[in-house]
Picture 1 (tube, one colour):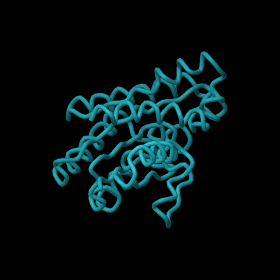
Picture 2 (cartoon, one colour; picture 1 turned 120 degrees about the horizontal axis):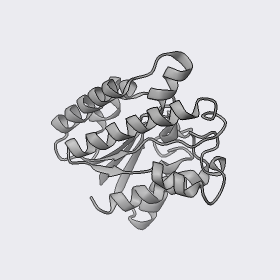
Picture 3 (cartoon, one colour; picture 1 turned 90 degrees about the horizontal axis):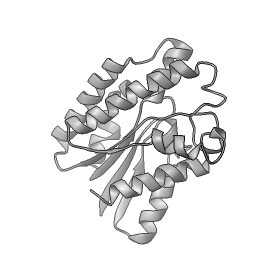
Picture 4 (cartoon, helix red, strand yellow; picture 1 turned 180 degrees about the horizontal axis):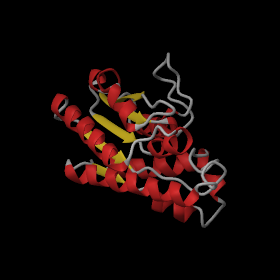
Length: 206
């Protein structure tokens, strides 16, 4: 049985259980789990270790417990919006260069310990809605910098990269931004379905 790990912040966390691994929350990890679990009975074990509020440095701080010790065959990671948001709200963000440095350290250490792992990097994203509109230009510009660094990480280590900002921008042409991301950051069910579909496409190419 192969192990799939979802890693990231609140978008991945999505109200997952801290007690039961089979309760993977209400977001894209559960949608992926349902899809793959139905199509491939008893082939995969799933872990969701996303934690709401996490920045890249927070994920790095728990690399042993929440990544390496789980020995995943496949890991996807979505991180970056809080590295910007925490600077706007609390002056405690992670600038783009440090984001790249810590992300690189994270990937290098995981690959060293788990050389056969397949890693999927998801692009951080946002839309203009209640949580982002006040500082929209700055917020969008800074998230785009983290998105560029995430893509650079994927290219540097020859990892799979999932672009999501363009997908949400296109989706926002068909319905208001809050239809997809309730506050401009956190996906609705439809938003999570968008991520799940892109995730499955990438997974099938591994």
